[in-house]
Image (cartoon, rainbow, N blue to C red):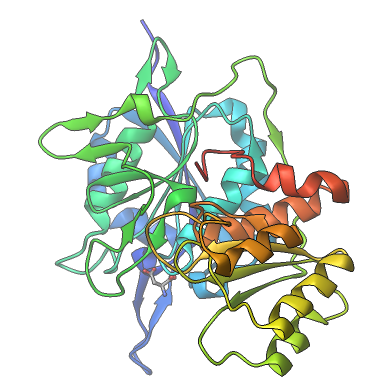
Length: 342
Ligand code: ASP
């Protein structure tokens, strides 16, 4: 007989735990104990739940790598005392946080499930209860005494996704997230439809490791017709910059104008890592498919393949924090570390 799953609920902030400020009418994070008070249903779940709250819960628009380190350290400290972790988080930057944590938690063998809501938990029409209750239920799922999910995921509106494959696509609908290039892992209906063949395969013998050092000397440049040499040059010449995500068109295409390619060539020669990620929601970078990406390939630009921008920027910060030798960086970036790319 296996014992009940123990789940740690980590509250970082977000709409789920907000209420209206009487004076301004704006939504603000409030005390976590009141949040739990609003969900007596949690006591009915067939698992033990303990809670931990950030001292100062935040709107996730204020999220930064220090907060990610706090989440990672909280999981590390409690790793062997719990079977799974559910992180309550604002939806605005949830995909960035889920991506960052997926890289920071190496050899994870327990579920870390991010969730939140579009309406506060106290609202009559809230989506928070379903999201929270099902996220906990999924985190508590076990087979032969072991958690069935062993990766960082995001649960929202009846679907569980691999966290580093997600992106927020809707500011109004309850279905706020998609994973454009990877199928959902679990669907909640009358029964839970579990697609276990899509789960990340873990190495049971490998030790769990937490990495909290991220380097944020990075930038994202989104290409647009008309982007000027002065703008691109100003960004690429920032002294402390170590890497950029270049959001290009379609299958990884960009202008073939001399000034553009020359700026990139000079930046790469100085040691800057340039990662090519497509602006398209669906599909992959394929450098060399068109003439407009062939030179970029020859310059040594890194292919982000089908990665999301959220996963690309957090992977860049993570790898820069690992002090990887310059000549290995491209190969490692182009390798799927946590199922974030094909
Ligand atoms: N602004 C909120 C946040 O990201 C939105 C939400 O929670 O859905 O914290």
